[in-house]
Length: 371
Image (tube, rainbow, N blue to C red):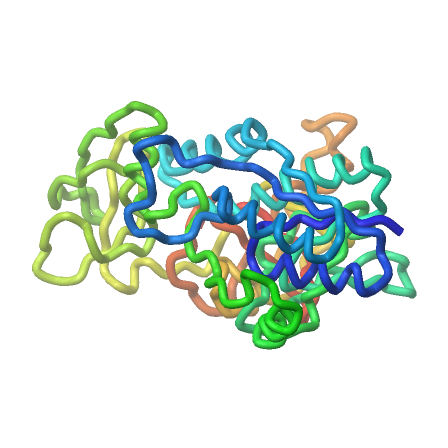
């Protein structure tokens, strides 16, 4: 069996390559060239970007050490279209995106899986901390949490389909990070002590607003802060600087803590409220992916609305389309779901993902549209 290993230059994907090879697979290493920092815009914080030339050379070094072929595939245009531009569109429209979800869906398990098939590879391998299992009773594949709770990445993989799960290997899903570094050290990998990437690769300094201004060549005008009754409270510096639940760096003092409760791009207004006003018991998510198939009715499960958030109990109801109005395609699985939480949740944010769990199994997820 042949496997195409996605190697970022970090320790996780390098150990994934080693373990896949040790399991007897015929391996090919590759790095996806996704983004290159423009000249004159070097990262002022010296934080590590996952797309740097140094990372590609580290990946090549590991592949050479393991004796496997290595390639660099240029996906910069795909990355711009599928990740960067939707990221900007979300912020411009008052949403807060998670670009890693788009990258996984369209690049790592979309374009790269297609490339693997062109190379007659049976699998794509990544260093994600999650597990894939096959249910012997139903024959369907399951996506499960990684066993190391501090590294679990199942939240950003909810878009995986049955076909993708059948052709993806995640060797680190049952391992702890400390053991992964131990394997790297024992094999003399140059990146054994390399720190994990903490930032979005195309915004290494964390200045999202600055990146959006440079990329678009646009200025985003100030607008009005209002309270929940619509009363003027002050002036904000442009909606791309804010997200739901934000209370710091609002640009002015209000005498008591104020929190962003709503962002409206059409009116260029931001609604502020008190600490209790950022809580909500309801969310509606679109572009929904049900990994094992859409349930016939509402279900009880746990839901996570942020990457590091602890899952919370909720009732989830798929939105069933009106067959008379929607026509022949109306009996297809609905791309939307409504989520009713048992307890109010803080800062449910449009643009983020709502991911559903049954124990450690991911049922599916979608992009939050309303709260």
